[in-house]
Image (tube, rainbow, N blue to C red; front, side, top):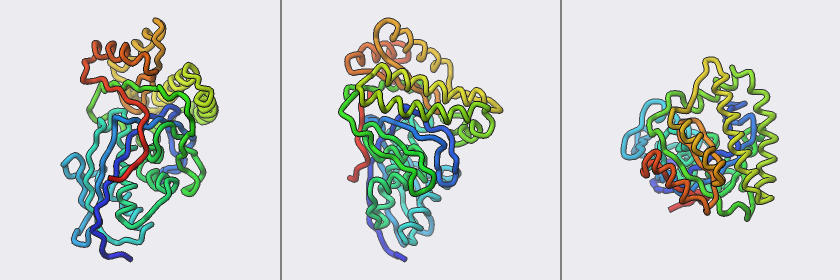
Amino acid sequence: MTTSSDKTVTAVAHTNIALIKYWGKQNPELIIPYTGSLSLTLDQFYTQTSVTFNANLDKDQITIDGQPVTGKSGQRVHNFLSIVRRESGIDLNAQVKSTNHVPTAAGLASSASAFAALAAAASKAAGMNLSLTDLSRLARRGSGSACRSIFGGFVEWQKGSDDTNSYAIPVETTHLNDICIVALTIEKHQKPISSREGMALSVTTSPYYPTWVKVVEADLENIKAAIQDDDFTRFGTISELNAMRMHALTLSADPDFLYFNGDTLTAMNEVKRLRHSGIECYYTIDAGPNIKVICQQANVQTITDTFSNLFGPTKVTVAKPGPGVKYL
Protein backbone atom coordinates (compact mmCIF):
# COMPACT_ATOMS: atom_id res chain seq x y z
CA MET A 1 0.00 0.00 0.00
CA THR A 2 1.41 3.35 -1.03
CA THR A 3 1.23 6.16 1.49
CA SER A 4 2.94 8.95 -0.40
CA SER A 5 2.80 10.26 -3.93
CA ASP A 6 2.43 14.03 -4.33
CA LYS A 7 3.36 13.73 -8.01
CA THR A 8 1.07 15.87 -10.16
CA VAL A 9 0.31 14.44 -13.58
CA THR A 10 -1.54 16.39 -16.27
CA ALA A 11 -3.21 14.78 -19.26
CA VAL A 12 -5.20 16.09 -22.21
CA ALA A 13 -7.87 14.08 -24.03
CA HIS A 14 -10.03 15.16 -26.94
CA THR A 15 -13.69 14.40 -27.26
CA ASN A 16 -15.11 12.17 -29.95
CA ILE A 17 -18.33 11.98 -31.88
CA ALA A 18 -19.93 8.60 -32.35
CA LEU A 19 -20.79 7.87 -35.97
CA ILE A 20 -22.09 4.42 -35.12
CA LYS A 21 -23.73 5.03 -31.77
CA TYR A 22 -23.24 3.39 -28.40
CA TRP A 23 -26.66 3.36 -26.77
CA GLY A 24 -27.30 0.86 -24.00
CA LYS A 25 -25.32 -1.17 -21.48
CA GLN A 26 -25.59 -4.90 -20.94
CA ASN A 27 -23.52 -4.47 -17.76
CA PRO A 28 -24.13 -1.03 -16.23
CA GLU A 29 -21.54 -1.48 -13.46
CA LEU A 30 -18.65 -2.35 -15.78
CA ILE A 31 -20.12 -0.33 -18.68
CA ILE A 32 -20.12 -3.18 -21.17
CA PRO A 33 -22.27 -2.15 -24.15
CA TYR A 34 -24.81 -4.19 -26.08
CA THR A 35 -23.13 -3.17 -29.35
CA GLY A 36 -19.83 -1.99 -30.73
CA SER A 37 -19.49 1.61 -31.91
CA LEU A 38 -17.28 3.78 -34.09
CA SER A 39 -16.23 7.37 -33.54
CA LEU A 40 -14.04 10.20 -34.77
CA THR A 41 -11.83 12.02 -32.27
CA LEU A 42 -11.97 15.80 -32.80
CA ASP A 43 -9.21 18.40 -32.57
CA GLN A 44 -11.26 21.36 -31.28
CA PHE A 45 -12.85 19.96 -28.11
CA TYR A 46 -10.80 18.64 -25.20
CA THR A 47 -10.38 18.30 -21.45
CA GLN A 48 -7.19 19.00 -19.49
CA THR A 49 -6.96 17.30 -16.10
CA SER A 50 -4.31 17.32 -13.36
CA VAL A 51 -4.30 14.72 -10.58
CA THR A 52 -2.24 14.60 -7.37
CA PHE A 53 -2.56 11.89 -4.73
CA ASN A 54 -1.76 13.57 -1.43
CA ALA A 55 -1.44 12.10 2.07
CA ASN A 56 -2.56 15.40 3.59
CA LEU A 57 -6.05 15.29 2.05
CA ASP A 58 -8.88 13.88 4.16
CA LYS A 59 -11.09 13.40 1.08
CA ASP A 60 -10.96 13.75 -2.69
CA GLN A 61 -10.99 17.38 -3.84
CA ILE A 62 -12.46 17.86 -7.31
CA THR A 63 -12.77 21.09 -9.26
CA ILE A 64 -14.03 21.48 -12.81
CA ASP A 65 -13.54 24.83 -14.54
CA GLY A 66 -12.55 26.31 -11.17
CA GLN A 67 -15.72 25.22 -9.38
CA PRO A 68 -15.88 22.56 -6.63
CA VAL A 69 -17.81 19.49 -7.78
CA THR A 70 -20.21 17.76 -5.40
CA GLY A 71 -23.38 15.70 -5.69
CA LYS A 72 -23.77 13.06 -8.41
CA SER A 73 -20.94 14.39 -10.57
CA GLY A 74 -18.53 14.48 -7.64
CA GLN A 75 -19.52 10.96 -6.60
CA ARG A 76 -18.93 9.70 -10.13
CA VAL A 77 -15.36 11.05 -10.11
CA HIS A 78 -14.78 9.72 -6.57
CA ASN A 79 -15.99 6.25 -7.63
CA PHE A 80 -13.61 6.31 -10.57
CA LEU A 81 -10.68 7.36 -8.38
CA SER A 82 -11.54 4.46 -6.07
CA ILE A 83 -11.11 2.07 -9.02
CA VAL A 84 -7.68 3.59 -9.69
CA ARG A 85 -6.76 3.27 -6.00
CA ARG A 86 -7.85 -0.35 -5.92
CA GLU A 87 -5.97 -1.29 -9.11
CA SER A 88 -2.79 0.61 -8.21
CA GLY A 89 -2.65 -0.25 -4.50
CA ILE A 90 -2.43 3.41 -3.55
CA ASP A 91 -4.40 4.51 -0.48
CA LEU A 92 -4.50 8.28 -0.77
CA ASN A 93 -7.10 10.88 -1.56
CA ALA A 94 -6.67 12.90 -4.72
CA GLN A 95 -6.80 16.49 -5.82
CA VAL A 96 -8.34 16.72 -9.29
CA LYS A 97 -8.35 19.93 -11.31
CA SER A 98 -10.06 19.74 -14.66
CA THR A 99 -10.80 22.25 -17.41
CA ASN A 100 -13.38 21.40 -20.05
CA HIS A 101 -13.11 22.92 -23.50
CA VAL A 102 -16.38 21.23 -24.46
CA PRO A 103 -19.98 22.41 -24.03
CA THR A 104 -20.86 20.20 -21.05
CA ALA A 105 -23.85 17.84 -21.32
CA ALA A 106 -25.28 19.34 -24.48
CA GLY A 107 -24.57 16.65 -27.05
CA LEU A 108 -20.82 17.00 -27.44
CA ALA A 109 -19.42 14.19 -25.36
CA SER A 110 -17.68 16.07 -22.57
CA SER A 111 -17.73 12.95 -20.39
CA ALA A 112 -15.65 11.16 -23.04
CA SER A 113 -12.75 13.61 -22.94
CA ALA A 114 -13.21 14.16 -19.18
CA PHE A 115 -12.86 10.53 -18.15
CA ALA A 116 -10.19 9.76 -20.75
CA ALA A 117 -8.06 12.61 -19.35
CA LEU A 118 -8.87 11.57 -15.77
CA ALA A 119 -7.96 7.94 -16.47
CA ALA A 120 -4.63 8.95 -18.01
CA ALA A 121 -3.67 11.46 -15.31
CA ALA A 122 -4.91 9.47 -12.29
CA SER A 123 -3.40 6.14 -13.35
CA LYS A 124 0.01 7.68 -13.99
CA ALA A 125 -0.11 9.75 -10.78
CA ALA A 126 -0.85 6.50 -8.92
CA GLY A 127 2.26 4.88 -10.39
CA MET A 128 0.53 2.78 -13.05
CA ASN A 129 2.09 2.66 -16.51
CA LEU A 130 -0.76 1.32 -18.57
CA SER A 131 -0.76 0.30 -22.22
CA LEU A 132 -3.19 2.24 -24.40
CA THR A 133 -5.47 -0.81 -24.44
CA ASP A 134 -5.53 -0.99 -20.63
CA LEU A 135 -5.98 2.78 -20.44
CA SER A 136 -8.99 2.43 -22.75
CA ARG A 137 -10.41 -0.30 -20.48
CA LEU A 138 -9.92 1.91 -17.43
CA ALA A 139 -11.47 5.00 -19.07
CA ARG A 140 -14.51 2.91 -20.00
CA ARG A 141 -15.26 2.44 -16.29
CA GLY A 142 -15.81 6.20 -15.98
CA SER A 143 -17.78 6.77 -19.18
CA GLY A 144 -18.28 4.31 -22.00
CA SER A 145 -17.42 6.74 -24.78
CA ALA A 146 -14.23 7.73 -22.92
CA CYS A 147 -12.58 4.48 -23.98
CA ARG A 148 -12.61 5.79 -27.56
CA SER A 149 -10.98 9.14 -26.67
CA ILE A 150 -7.73 7.39 -25.76
CA PHE A 151 -7.04 7.17 -29.50
CA GLY A 152 -7.06 9.72 -32.31
CA GLY A 153 -8.87 9.65 -35.65
CA PHE A 154 -11.38 6.88 -36.36
CA VAL A 155 -11.80 4.55 -33.40
CA GLU A 156 -13.82 1.36 -32.89
CA TRP A 157 -15.06 0.28 -29.45
CA GLN A 158 -15.16 -3.49 -29.48
CA LYS A 159 -18.10 -4.35 -27.24
CA GLY A 160 -16.52 -7.44 -25.69
CA SER A 161 -18.26 -9.41 -22.96
CA ASP A 162 -16.39 -8.49 -19.79
CA ASP A 163 -13.89 -6.04 -18.31
CA THR A 164 -10.92 -7.65 -20.03
CA ASN A 165 -12.11 -7.52 -23.63
CA SER A 166 -14.29 -4.40 -23.90
CA TYR A 167 -12.03 -1.61 -25.15
CA ALA A 168 -11.35 0.64 -28.12
CA ILE A 169 -8.88 0.20 -30.96
CA PRO A 170 -7.78 2.70 -33.63
CA VAL A 171 -9.09 2.17 -37.15
CA GLU A 172 -5.95 2.24 -39.25
CA THR A 173 -6.62 4.07 -42.50
CA THR A 174 -5.27 6.79 -44.76
CA HIS A 175 -8.70 7.36 -46.29
CA LEU A 176 -11.32 10.07 -45.69
CA ASN A 177 -8.49 12.27 -44.42
CA ASP A 178 -10.19 15.47 -45.58
CA ILE A 179 -13.22 14.87 -43.37
CA CYS A 180 -14.45 17.83 -41.34
CA ILE A 181 -17.09 18.22 -38.66
CA VAL A 182 -19.02 21.48 -38.44
CA ALA A 183 -20.29 21.48 -34.86
CA LEU A 184 -23.41 23.52 -34.16
CA THR A 185 -23.69 24.41 -30.48
CA ILE A 186 -27.40 25.10 -30.52
CA GLU A 187 -27.92 24.68 -26.78
CA LYS A 188 -25.37 24.94 -23.95
CA HIS A 189 -27.66 24.12 -21.04
CA GLN A 190 -27.68 20.81 -19.18
CA LYS A 191 -29.95 18.34 -20.94
CA PRO A 192 -33.10 17.26 -19.06
CA ILE A 193 -32.34 13.53 -19.17
CA SER A 194 -28.77 12.23 -18.98
CA SER A 195 -27.31 9.73 -21.43
CA ARG A 196 -27.19 7.11 -18.68
CA GLU A 197 -30.86 7.57 -17.84
CA GLY A 198 -31.84 7.72 -21.50
CA MET A 199 -29.96 4.53 -22.35
CA ALA A 200 -31.46 2.60 -19.45
CA LEU A 201 -34.98 3.72 -20.39
CA SER A 202 -34.45 2.78 -24.05
CA VAL A 203 -33.05 -0.66 -23.20
CA THR A 204 -35.81 -1.56 -20.77
CA THR A 205 -38.88 -0.06 -22.46
CA SER A 206 -38.39 0.43 -26.23
CA PRO A 207 -39.87 -2.52 -28.15
CA TYR A 208 -37.36 -1.79 -30.92
CA TYR A 209 -34.20 -2.24 -28.83
CA PRO A 210 -33.46 -5.86 -29.87
CA THR A 211 -33.64 -4.80 -33.52
CA TRP A 212 -31.28 -1.88 -32.82
CA VAL A 213 -28.64 -4.33 -31.58
CA LYS A 214 -28.81 -6.29 -34.83
CA VAL A 215 -28.84 -3.19 -37.03
CA VAL A 216 -25.78 -1.67 -35.34
CA GLU A 217 -23.73 -4.79 -36.07
CA ALA A 218 -24.43 -4.32 -39.77
CA ASP A 219 -23.95 -0.53 -39.67
CA LEU A 220 -20.56 -1.00 -37.98
CA GLU A 221 -19.26 -3.40 -40.61
CA ASN A 222 -20.63 -1.27 -43.45
CA ILE A 223 -19.10 2.00 -42.22
CA LYS A 224 -15.70 0.35 -41.74
CA ALA A 225 -15.91 -0.87 -45.32
CA ALA A 226 -16.86 2.65 -46.47
CA ILE A 227 -13.80 4.08 -44.68
CA GLN A 228 -11.45 1.56 -46.27
CA ASP A 229 -13.06 2.17 -49.69
CA ASP A 230 -12.69 5.96 -49.24
CA ASP A 231 -16.42 6.23 -49.95
CA PHE A 232 -17.60 9.47 -48.33
CA THR A 233 -21.17 9.20 -49.63
CA ARG A 234 -21.68 5.77 -48.12
CA PHE A 235 -19.88 6.83 -44.95
CA GLY A 236 -22.12 9.88 -44.46
CA THR A 237 -25.33 8.04 -45.33
CA ILE A 238 -24.65 5.30 -42.78
CA SER A 239 -23.71 7.83 -40.08
CA GLU A 240 -26.89 9.89 -40.54
CA LEU A 241 -29.16 6.85 -40.64
CA ASN A 242 -27.58 5.28 -37.56
CA ALA A 243 -28.14 8.51 -35.59
CA MET A 244 -31.83 8.57 -36.54
CA ARG A 245 -32.21 4.93 -35.56
CA MET A 246 -30.77 5.73 -32.14
CA HIS A 247 -33.17 8.60 -31.59
CA ALA A 248 -36.07 6.35 -32.64
CA LEU A 249 -35.35 4.46 -29.41
CA THR A 250 -35.95 7.59 -27.33
CA LEU A 251 -39.24 8.27 -29.12
CA SER A 252 -40.39 4.68 -28.56
CA ALA A 253 -39.38 4.47 -24.89
CA ASP A 254 -41.92 4.61 -22.07
CA PRO A 255 -42.14 7.40 -21.15
CA ASP A 256 -40.92 8.78 -24.46
CA PHE A 257 -38.34 11.56 -24.51
CA LEU A 258 -36.57 13.67 -27.10
CA TYR A 259 -33.15 15.32 -27.17
CA PHE A 260 -33.96 17.58 -30.13
CA ASN A 261 -35.32 21.11 -29.94
CA GLY A 262 -36.75 23.34 -32.67
CA ASP A 263 -33.32 24.52 -33.81
CA THR A 264 -32.19 20.90 -34.11
CA LEU A 265 -34.97 20.24 -36.62
CA THR A 266 -34.17 23.47 -38.48
CA ALA A 267 -30.53 22.40 -38.79
CA MET A 268 -31.45 18.88 -39.92
CA ASN A 269 -33.63 20.28 -42.68
CA GLU A 270 -30.92 22.72 -43.71
CA VAL A 271 -28.40 19.87 -44.08
CA LYS A 272 -30.85 18.06 -46.35
CA ARG A 273 -31.45 21.25 -48.36
CA LEU A 274 -27.70 21.74 -48.83
CA ARG A 275 -27.27 18.13 -49.86
CA HIS A 276 -30.06 18.34 -52.42
CA SER A 277 -28.45 21.50 -53.84
CA GLY A 278 -25.18 19.66 -54.46
CA ILE A 279 -23.27 20.48 -51.25
CA GLU A 280 -22.63 16.99 -49.91
CA CYS A 281 -23.04 16.83 -46.14
CA TYR A 282 -24.72 14.68 -43.50
CA TYR A 283 -25.67 15.12 -39.87
CA THR A 284 -25.24 13.14 -36.69
CA ILE A 285 -26.80 13.91 -33.32
CA ASP A 286 -25.97 12.43 -29.93
CA ALA A 287 -27.80 12.71 -26.60
CA GLY A 288 -28.53 16.43 -26.84
CA PRO A 289 -29.87 19.03 -29.25
CA ASN A 290 -26.57 19.89 -30.92
CA ILE A 291 -25.84 18.80 -34.46
CA LYS A 292 -22.57 17.78 -36.03
CA VAL A 293 -22.46 18.25 -39.80
CA ILE A 294 -20.18 15.75 -41.55
CA CYS A 295 -18.55 17.10 -44.69
CA GLN A 296 -15.33 17.35 -46.67
CA GLN A 297 -12.88 20.24 -46.69
CA ALA A 298 -14.07 21.57 -50.06
CA ASN A 299 -17.54 22.33 -48.68
CA VAL A 300 -16.63 23.65 -45.23
CA GLN A 301 -16.86 27.35 -46.09
CA THR A 302 -20.31 27.11 -47.68
CA ILE A 303 -21.63 25.08 -44.75
CA THR A 304 -20.16 27.33 -42.06
CA ASP A 305 -21.49 30.43 -43.83
CA THR A 306 -24.95 28.86 -44.05
CA PHE A 307 -25.17 27.97 -40.37
CA SER A 308 -23.50 31.18 -39.21
CA ASN A 309 -26.31 33.06 -40.96
CA LEU A 310 -28.90 30.78 -39.35
CA PHE A 311 -27.63 30.61 -35.75
CA GLY A 312 -24.82 33.16 -35.50
CA PRO A 313 -21.06 32.62 -36.01
CA THR A 314 -20.40 31.92 -32.30
CA LYS A 315 -22.54 28.76 -32.55
CA VAL A 316 -20.45 27.24 -35.36
CA THR A 317 -17.10 25.46 -34.88
CA VAL A 318 -15.12 23.58 -37.50
CA ALA A 319 -13.28 20.49 -36.25
CA LYS A 320 -10.98 18.03 -37.93
CA PRO A 321 -9.71 14.63 -36.81
CA GLY A 322 -7.95 15.00 -33.48
CA PRO A 323 -5.18 13.21 -31.57
CA GLY A 324 -5.24 10.58 -28.86
CA VAL A 325 -4.54 11.21 -25.19
CA LYS A 326 -1.26 12.92 -24.28
CA TYR A 327 0.62 14.02 -21.17
CA LEU A 328 1.85 17.56 -20.59
